[in-house]
Length: 426
Image (tube, rainbow, N blue to C red; front, side, top):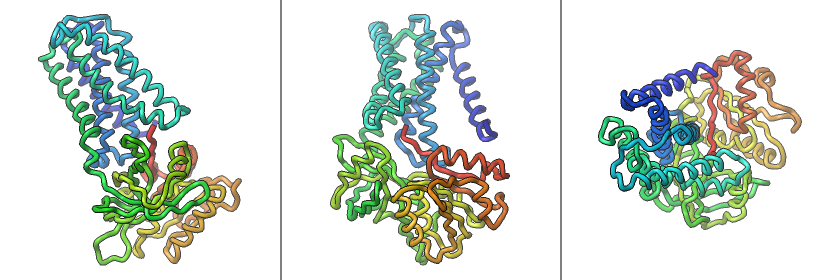
């Protein structure tokens, strides 16, 4: 537990207290506790629905869409836990319902919603279950939330539905249901259409270049986008980091990483890390139509023009730094880039990185052997300044990043100097 977690604990505690006092004061404890957990579950699921829409305004609030999906994951967990405790503790019908004729059905349908939540929660938490199965089953969360709303208002509840508690639950229900309707039936209108113009195999990865058929997305260098290659009958977006630099309308020849521009031409390096990406590689071809939603991510927003930087990349984690190298300007601070990996792909990417760096003030540090492990001690021995003078940006396997961050903190780095994407779809 670190200091940065305390604001979250305080916010969570205040919200929990607020929910507790939102419930009727005269409600007996045996009914108030399960009602509390049910309300927590509804609020959590509604907020998770909002995040699933990927609204751009949420990124500054949580530090990027990658962080938003961490919130989405934990809100889902709290929603499942709240519903589970409610289910186990609720003593039985309480006597109030929007329409008594539907009370029995409201109770029964709530049971089925609980079974669905348990099943889908289990699928989400078991990483061994293929991504594709998780993706399609996760779409059922919206209908389950709607069923939960029906259960809330048509079962026998321990408070008046036209009370403050009932009004609050109406607002929560509207937020969640409107978010689901927006995501399911309206959001696709905001996407941009692209067509693949080049496919370049790179060992167990492939570099894809695509051009916009009309208006391109707006993005910052190092951001990621959601791509749907149209292989499925339903939309199937997956996040990939954009390796190209945006086109900036200015007198500068090269775009700054903090400048937002248009992506009339986008490039991605996609590695076959799972069944979905491996299948994707085998089906990519020139002329393929792609739907793009982006850009997302806030890694660029952490950069300070007057601070020297250290970039750490592991394997395919080099992708955001490819965009940063391409957008590097002559007046930018010097950069130390530590890049580790293995196999033929690592060699190919090293060659590409070297070509992109050219005469830029970016010092590339590569591992001397595949068996060598990057450590804080090795990095510090290569730096010109004290560890506290740098901004640290990292992208790669989570265990590697967490280990290096811990080592650097022990050597004096402050946690607010470290920045990395935490993106995970599950």
